[in-house]
Image (cartoon, rainbow, N blue to C red; front, side, top):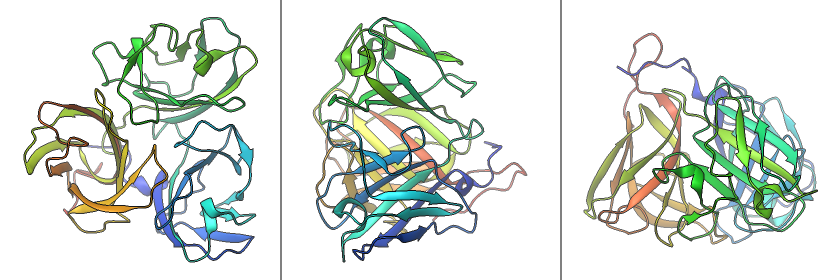
Amino acid sequence: MAYTTIDDPEAYFQTVLYTGDGNDSRTITLPADTDMQPDMIWIKERSSTSSHYLTSIGMGIGTRLEPDGTSTESTEGLSAVTSDGFTIGTSTNQVNQNTITHVAWCWKESATAGFDIVTYTGNGSARTISHSLSAVPHLMILKSRTYAENWQIYHHKMASDPETDYLEFRNTAIADSATTWNDTAPTSSVFSVGTRDATNKNTYTYINYLWTAKQGFSKFGSYVGNGNADGVFIYTGFRPAYIMFKDVNNSNSWIIMDTKRDPENIMAATLYADDSVAESDTDRGDAVSNGFKCRGTSNAFNGSGRTYIYMAFAEAPFVNSKGVPCNAR
């Protein structure tokens, strides 16, 4: 059985749905019984087409970047976090457009939960930078804050030698680069950057979001599609609350699904990390007690012989620290 040290995933990750009202100074409260003060908040309109909005500590809550674009940081939208949510300071289309439905995915920075946020200033020379995970990062999502560069993504399963490659929040395939991560795998204390502008140009400022898998709470893996409507099953060791996945070798979007927008199987409500389009309903898969199962033949998530990477966070561990299994949905 898969035991965990995190019996309550909602202490570290929560999703909240709300409808915009167009008003300033509005507080959004997270829905779980467990209070969680978020350190990273990613918001997307569901019923309209404004860009994604991502803010976090490090930059300062309310300073935002856009995962579906290359723009530099700007200060707007949120004004603060609360002990159990966040406050919208100035209403904008991205965070509180009147009558428009929104989703916000919220994470708590914690070594216990395998999540760290690092900021640094580039110097143009290959180097290492410290992190606080006390474990090897499995996923890094990095962006220049002050210059219009693409997001740079490292995933430990995107290739046999992932330190030599990178992905971006665009519908493009994996690319090779010796200067992104300096062809050096991250360690339990540092990650490496080379001389590429997107990760280490002199005087640029950067933010890097790093995760390592925690049994029963998070997983950053890969799978190979089978091209069948009865798709592949991916074991995570928990019932997923959130899944984002990407076809690494082809030009397909980053698909985001969660169990708040789809509380029952089949999960069909789809958003794309690299696109501002509104939510669409396309059968994608089932969230089950110990993983997820693809439903459908789309090359975007289950093409025959295609390799996909994913990041997933738990709604409930398959088996908690007392040996009690969770229920299926």
